[in-house]
Structure formats: structure tokens, C-alpha cells
Image (cartoon, rainbow, N blue to C red; front, top):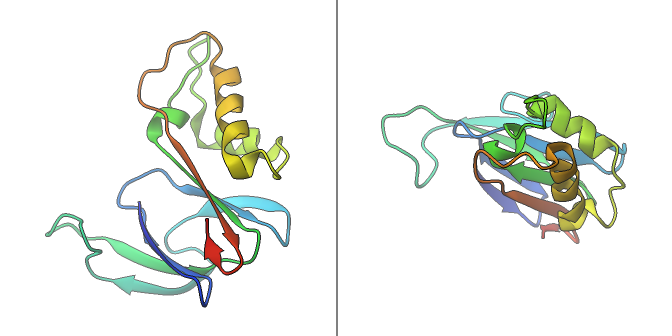
Length: 144
């Protein structure tokens, strides 16, 4: 995921570059959704090469406008590919369902609750891959 954020406008320009889709909490509606390219939330779609990505590969950049209190949850595929004792993978919808069952403030904003929920799902089953979670929140015009 490559992203750029303009604190003055709340606009986020991003490309997923093949990474898992980002979860987007719309604070004003109190709803979770997916931050996807070519989304109905797009302000404008850009074509071209984001800085630092492989030349010769096509990437699509999308611009969306975040509102105050919105959250973005970025994660590695090790999160959605973790499995429980019955070898059932969490998956994208499983992660989304876990987040919908958690209080947004303050635990999700600090990433402690999503990580704990994934660990509870996994139980004693070892991780197959690295697991990282980054939580960004739109506050006072900027992502933090």
C-alpha cells in the first residue's frame, strides 16, 4: 500500500499495489467498509506510477476524502491468512466481522483490540506468516 494524505483537505491518494484491502471506518455513519480502488467514495482516479513502485507495472491511484474520526486499518496478509485450530482461515470478511464486534474508541484506534481479536481467533495455532497492523485516524485534519 502506498498512500499520501493532505491534512488541509482530508484527501487520501492511494494505490493498493497488490496488498490486502484497507478497512475504513466511517465515523459519521459508524460503519465499516473497504477502501478499494475504483470505489464509489472516489473523488478522482489517477493513472501513473506512484513513487517507489516497480517501473513497467501498472498501478491505479485513487483519491478519497476522509472525515474527522475516520479510521484506516492496514494489515499484512498474515492477519487474514491466520488459521484457528480447525484450520479455518480468518479471511477478509472474518477480519471485518471481528472489527464490527469491537468498540471503536479507544481500543481500535490504538490497534490493541484488533490484534487481540485476531489472537483470540487463532488461539494456540501458530502464525504462518508475519502479522502487522497499522491504525491511522483522521484527527484535526491529519492522519495520526
